Image 1 (cartoon, one colour):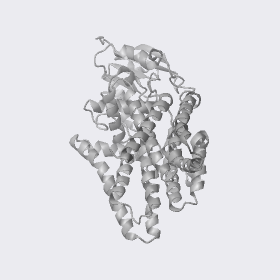
Image 2: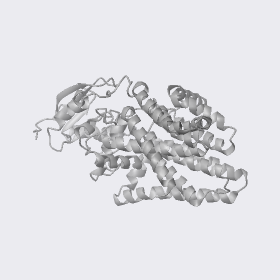
Image 3: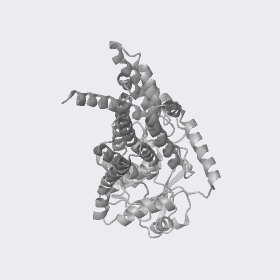
Image 4: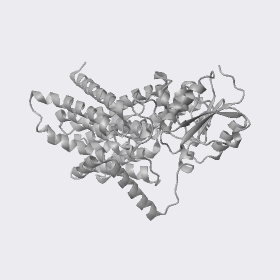
Length: 495
C-alpha cells in the first residue's frame, strides 16, 4: 500500500469517527432516537423494504423521488429491516465521504494541517443545522456527490491544465447523473459548476474543448442512467418510472400561479429565510464566496454553482427547511480561507492534538446546539420506543401474521417502520402529489376491505364503517395533526 493510500485511509477513518459521533445526536435515524418520525424518511425506507422483497418502485409502490434514493434505502433494509439502523450506517458513510472530500478540497489550497482540524467544525456547522431537518433527506444524500464535483472542478482550475481529462469529465457526468436520479431539483449545483467550465473554454474560443466537454459529461450521465434502464426494462416499468419521476414531478407537484415579479420577491424571501435560519454555516459560506470573488474562474465556478443551485431549489416558490441543505457544500468556500489563515500558526508537535481536541469539543457541543436535540416537536433523544405512537400501534399490528397496512389520507408516518413490515399496495400512503388516482385508490382499498389495518389522522370517517373498527388512538408529538387512529378489519383473527 502506498503512502498516499495509507494517508487517505487515515483521513477517511478520522472522518468516519466524526460522522458517527456527530450523527449519533444530529439525525433521528440514530439508535439514540426511538424512530425517525419524518414522513419522507419513512417513505424512502418503506419503499426500500418493498424493493428488497421484489417490488418495483413506481410500478408497485408510488412515490415521486428518484430511483437511486430508494435503491440506497433498499441496501439499508438489507442491513436492518426493522428500524433505521441501516439508514444511520448509510448517513454515517455519506457524511464521512463528504468530510473526506472536503479535506481534499482544503488541501488544494495548501492548508494540509488545518484541513484535519476543520473536519469536526464543518460537521458541527452543517449537520446540526435547521436545514438538516430530521436526517435522511435527499439533499443530504447528494452532499458528497456535489462536494466531489466541487473538488474535481477546483482541482482542474488550479492545475493549469489546458483541458480536463476524459475520465474526469465522465466522472462529472456520473456524479451529476446520480444527483439527477436522486432528486432533479438539486441539479442547479452541478449545472452551475459545469457551466463555469464551459464558459471558460468559450471565452477562450476553445470550441473543440466545449464540444469535447459536452460529449464526455453526457457520456458519464448516460452511464449513470444505464442501470435504471436495465432495472425498469426487465421489470416492465419504464413507463411508470418516467411517468412518475418526470411527468408527475413537473406537472402534478407543487406549482404556483405567481407572476414574474411576485415570484422573484418570493424567491428572495425564501433565500433570506434559509440564510438567517441556518446562520451557522451560511455566514461562513457568504464570507467565503466574497473572498473567492478575486480568485478568477475558481470563484466563478463556486458562485455559479451556488447561484444556480439556489435558483433551481427555490424557483418553485415552495420552501421546506431541508431544501437549503442542497447548498451546504458551498460552506467549504468559507472554510478554505480560514484554514489557510490557521495553517500559518500550526507548527510543532502539539499540532497533532488540535484535531482531536476540536473533535471532542464539537461532539460535546452537539447536544447543546443540534436542531433535533432541541426541536419542539417529534420524538426525543433517548425516548423509549413504547412511548411513541408508532410502537403503540405496532403492538396491535404485529398481532397479525404478515399484516396489510394502509396509511390513509396522509404521508407515511412511520407505522410500517415500527411494525417492521413493507407496504403491499401501490398507494400505501397519500403523498402531496396532486394525483386523483391516488385518492380514488386509497378510498377503494377501504371500501373493499383490502387492508388488515388502517392508520389515519381523521376519526369518524364514514367509509370505515362497513369493514373496519377503531381499536386504538394515540397522541402525536406536536405534529400538524393532534391524534392518530388505528382501525382493524372486522372479524380479523390475531395470529
